[in-house]
Structures are given as C-alpha cells and as structure tokens.
Image (cartoon, rainbow, N blue to C red):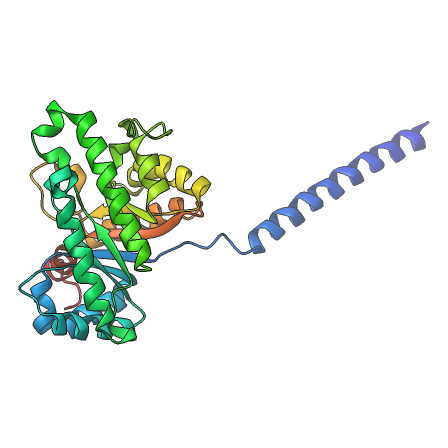
Length: 308
C-alpha cells in the first residue's frame, strides 16, 4: 500500500512538472513570435506653401527624419506651378507623397461647390503639364462648416449640401485618377448622415464616399486620440478605406488637453507611439497625421531638438 501511494504521489508530481514545463514552453513561443507590426507612417499638413520657395531641402530632410510619408500641401495662388513642381519632385525623390490641399468652411454650401471644382480643374491642368515625379498624388479637402453660424441654425441642410458637394468633388478626383481624402472632426460620427443615404452617421457616409479621412482627434493622450478615432477606424476596416489619426502640436486657446504644444518631446513621442500601436490593430490605419509642419518644427527647435 505504501508503494502504491508513493507511486501515485510521484505520478501526480510528474504531471505537474510536465504541465509547468508545457506552460513555460508556450510562454517562450509567444515571447519569440514576432509582435504585430506598428504602422509608424506619418503625414503632416503644410499650410504655408510659400515656405517651399526657400526651404524645400529643409522640409524634405525634416520629413525624412520624422518618418513623414505624406505631405498635405496647401495650394495658394501666390506660389507658382514651377515652385510646386520643384518641391513635389524633391519630396518624390525621398519617397514622400504630396497631396494637394485646400478648403474653406463655405465650400460646404451649394454655392461653394464651384470653388472646390476650381481647385480640381487647376490640379488637372497642373498634373497634365508636369513630369511624373512632379505630379500631386492625391487631393485633400478640409471643409469645416461647423465653425460658421449657419451650422447651428441649419445643420441638416448643411449636411445635405456638404455631402452633395463632396460627391461631385470625389467623382471629379476619381476621373483624374486621384485619391480623395477629407479632414473631419472626431465627433462627425454623432451627426446623422444625409437623408438620401442609408447610413447611421455622417462619418460613415464620408468614409464610404472618399478614399480616406483624417480624423482631427486632437488630445494630449495617445489613448484618447485612438478612442476618439476608434469608431471611424472600425467603419473603415469594414469598408476597406483608410483613416489617419490626427495629432495637434500647435498652440490653441481651446484647451491644453487638445495639443502637445506645452508637452515635452518625450511625452509627445511616447503618446504618438501609443496611438500608433493602438491604431495598428486596424487594417484601415494609415498612420498619424500631425498638425502641422511649422508647429512640429517649432516643437523640435524650442525643445532643443535638431534643426530642421
């Protein structure tokens, strides 16, 4: 009997050893498996296009150091086509895609549709006259009618006009073979879509009808930036579209919690990486879109970083 009990004890102990070894082996395998890749691509908005006249080399070099793969460059009449060509070609040589950028709150109104069409007409003429490496590779409209008073009085009608204009602009961009993106506020998912469409929110409608959106999810926390963009990312996952998560570096009087302006470089880097890691769980995540180039340069220089 003693031998039987001892054998049972040894047998049970052996089972625990085997189980523990199996768990350790499983943990080791999980540890050695490659972790999911973090998409650290970045875009930035360059609003003052006059900078490209004298700072093309600096802008391109800065973009290379910061991992910028896309620049949304505003189109301004004061800047010549040849100046745009030189800049786009320089960016292209460094693997950076340049998208034409413009917009105004009143472009959302029916009478503002032509202003967007005028930009697209200029863009077609410019690209047709340019060498392949000088061409804009996409277009982004930043239309924010909610900053005007009419939004409070006639939100539903503004949505109808804004969406109708967007349909026309997207169709024209498509005809030209250009991806069309839109900069949108994070709360657009709480706004009903146009009445003619079968969508539960205006954000979903925008994602359905454009190639990509940049969500202005401006907070000083990577997790909050992600959470404010999560619904759009999930919608874009389903629809096969792309989403940039917006990140604010500029000074603003709307609250310090909206920007990294007064945060340290390390805090900025840590939170950017946190947002990118969370976003990378989504197939739709295109990267972080940093607002804006000049604020980014200021952050680097003011905090003792590299010169641009």
